[in-house]
Amino acid sequence: MTNRSRTDRPPTNDPGTDGNVTNTPEPLLEVRSLSVSYRTRGGTVRAVRGVDLDVWPGQVTAVVGESGSGKSTTAHAIMRLLAANGGIDAGTVRFGRHDLTALSERELRTVRGAQIGLVPQDPTVSLNPVKRVGEQVAEVLRIHRLATRRAAGSEAIAILDRAGLPDAATRARQYPHELSGGMRQRALIAIAIAGRPRLIVADEPTSALDVTVQRVILDHLQHLTEESGTAVLLVTHDLGVAADRAQRIVVMSEGRVVEAGPTRDILDHPRHAYTRRLLAAAPSLTTARPRATVTTPSAPGAAAAPLVEVHNAVKEFRLPRAEGSARTLRAVDDVSFTLHRGRTLALVGESGSGKSTTARLVLRLTDPTSGRVVFDGADVTSARGTRARQLRRRAQLVYQNPYASLDPRFSIGEVITEPLRAFRVGDRATRLARARELLERVALPAATLERRPAELSGGQRQRVAIARALALSPDLVVCDEPVSALDVSVQAQVLDLLAELQTDTGVAYLFISHDLAVVRQIAHRVAVMRAGRIVETGTAEELFTRPRHDYTRELLAAIPGGRHTTATPEPPKKKTTKEHA
Image (cartoon, rainbow, N blue to C red; front, side, top):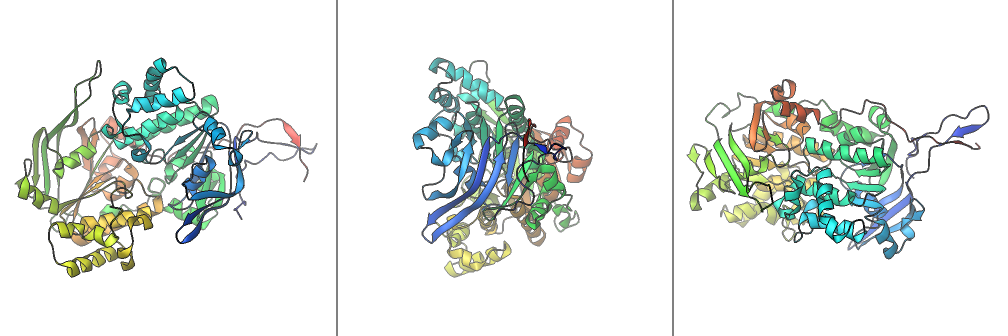
């Protein structure tokens, strides 16, 4: 049974003396007793169990929960976009006058895109890699006959601009691989809003975006709800976003709704223990002690010579030709910083600010246009061959996406021991022993060695990625958005793990993140990047309490989670009708 102690339907007014009550309007989307299962080799897995939820016109309803709670499956079932082995076992999904569970595929095609827009979670696999971004937006307009072939191109540029993509005319001519992760996500949002749908199903639409761009996108979605009555079903693991943007929150765990109600009620007076755990783990909604305090400035090596020194680094890229646009992009512009052993330096800034490119320069995965990179006293700016290989052994990388960073053909044991094999460290037995030791260090059972990446959750995969990065006992680990794809409870566990490993091993972290709430907990020093330049550097405490640059203050103001103390609006009331007890 679904938890109905705090019903998902907004409350009606108390009855007057005439026995009448004031009702809310009918929801645009009404889900009742929805159950979904998947057929697997091991049998049938029930992913969603008797879910009820409503979404009203002009409102944002957020579905929150841990990875595997069933929130994305619920969203995909609503649009009938389940995987081939998935199916709806029971329940109804009413959208306006339609029961979406009863429509034919042909009828669904007239609803999807035009009346219901979808923003998928992963832009890497959701955009066509062989079509320019502008063409993919224009395709929606042409399919639904919203623009002529001649006008679709210019309309697509305008929509990309509305979705917050900078220099939309240039970006429309680029392919997805030429854009940053945040830019690709904004392109997906442009595709979803192109048809001006009545309902937008947004599956983690801002997980890849920095806080300022996140605010722009969510502001735009909010504008749509206020201006045209568009409804948004927002699937998110970021409780700060849900707190700021949703009028109602639905909390899911193990395929069930455990709590639902107005946002302010859920956040201020959570009734379910699971909801309370989620709120306690959310970095933007908690004042937990910063994890970085476990490593003090007096730690061994902290006052010694820097491990990493970057001097006046510049990196330029050529851009496709576009009238009135620059021919080159200076992604990194005169950047300098130092990083000591046992310390964490966070690079923060908007998508496209140069954070990841700077990290690639440090790792020597790309060549600087000018400037110098010094690692442990040695100039590695032009390192090739043996010298570059030695650097790779001492500097490792944890990628943003735990789903794409592990080879699906390998067992976990093979994934972890691969760096050891590549550098010919030890024999088969000692490598296996090292893998077991690393799994224990990242709090995974030894039995995980025999499993494949597909059999693990997102948080478990990221732990494996960290274990692999530590296999060669590196001096430096570059963490490129290592927790942005994880739900808040797993995110907290991974951050605790990183801090513990730093205390035990003295490893240095170059931590790249757009989530300033996470940065405050993990970093000793923070460098704020904008348009390729570092505009402010300081300790985490200094930067968060006494920011000097206007851009830094703008980033801090955009951290989600600060609005939930305001009153939560209910759907507009309509005329009274008679109800009987």
